[in-house]
Image 1 (cartoon, helix red, strand yellow):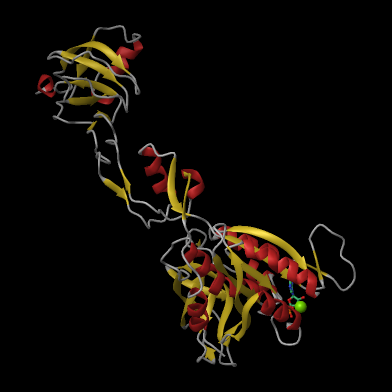
Image 2 (cartoon, protein in one colour; image 1 turned 180 degrees about the vertical axis):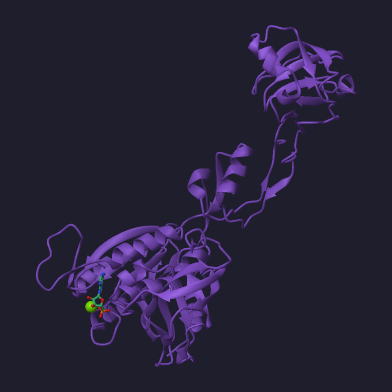
Length: 425
Ligand code: AMP
Ligand code: MG
C-alpha cells in the first residue's frame, strides 16, 4: 500500500502545465494569466467627480455656512461621458454629475446636499445661480486621473488566477482578450456491463451510470473541459476503441474495473495502449486506483504522454479519489500553484471509528455554531451511498494511525464547498 501523498506525488510527476492561449476575458474565470498585464492608460483617464454637485473654485466658498451662503453663477451642466471646454472662473460653477470629467478651472465639487439644489430644482433649475452652504476644500469630491491605475503600471502578474475582480480590472484597462494557460480537456470513460445512461429505461440487473456525471461536473467545477466518451462494456475491442479516443485529451479519467477480481480486461487493454500500474492507496474510500500513461501524438507530430487515472467504481470512492488526485492534476495543468484542498479545523459532533489503518475521508456537514465549526457525519458511510456526498459539504480526514476519534476532538475537514456555502446560524 502507498500513502495518499505518495500516490499524488507520482501522479503529479506525469502532469505538466499546459500551453497559453488567447481567450475573451469572460471565458477565463479561474484560469491563470500567462502574461504580465501592464496598463496602457490611466484609470480613470481624467479627474472626475465623485458626487452629483457643483464644480467650483474652493476659494469662492471660504466662510460659507447655512446662514451665510456663497452665491455663484451656474454657467453649464456636465453629465458623465461628456467633456466641456467651458472654464470655471471665480464666481461661477458648472453643475456636474458623478463620473463626469472635472472642467478646467474647478478645484472642488460641492455635493447637492450642501447647496440650495432642492429649491433650484423646485423652480425647474431655471435660476442662474446656486447658493453654497459649506466651505469646500481643494480636491473635495474629485477622483484624480490614475487614482486606481496609472499608465505603464504593472497591474496583474503572470501566474495570477483570474477571479471576477481581475476580469473586471482587465476590462477597465480595455482588454477584450488575454493570454491564459489553456483549460485541460479531460476525457471521461465509464466502464462496466451493468451501466445504462440516464434517460433510458432500466433493464433488470442494470444501474444508471452516475460516475460519468459526478466526474464531468467536478472537471467543470475545477476549470477543465469534460469530454464524455460514454460507457464501455467490459469487452476488449470496445474498451480499446474508447480508450483510444482518450488520447486526444490532456487527461483520461476512467471509472471502475480497477478493483480485485474484475480489472483484468481494463488492465490488459490499458497495458496495450500505454503503461499502467495498479495501486492500493492507504485511504478509504477509494483504495484501488490505477495510474498510467497513454502514448499519443501531438498536433505538431511529437510524441506525448496522456496521463490516465483509473478511479474506483463505487460512486463515493470515485468522487473522493477525484478530489484527492484528479483535482490537483487539473489545477496543475491550469497553472495553479495551490493544489491542496481548502481545509479547516472543526469539532467532531460524534465519534468516528477507523480500524483498518487507512486514511478515512468521512462525509460530513460542517456548520458554524457559536463561532465554532462543528462536523456531523451524513449518516451511513458506505462507498455506494452517493447521497452521503449529496448531504455533505466536507470530508473529515481521519489519519491512518488513529483508530478512533472521540466526539469533541478537533479534526481537519477538507471543504467540498468553500467558503461561501458553509452554513452559519
Ligand atoms: P468495480 O470497480 O467495477 O468493481 O465497481 C464497483 C462498484 O461501482 C460496482 O457496484 C459498480 O456497479 C459500481 N459502478 C461502477 N461504475 C459505475 C458508474 N459509472 N456509476 C455508478 N456506479 C458504478
Ligand atoms: Mg465492474
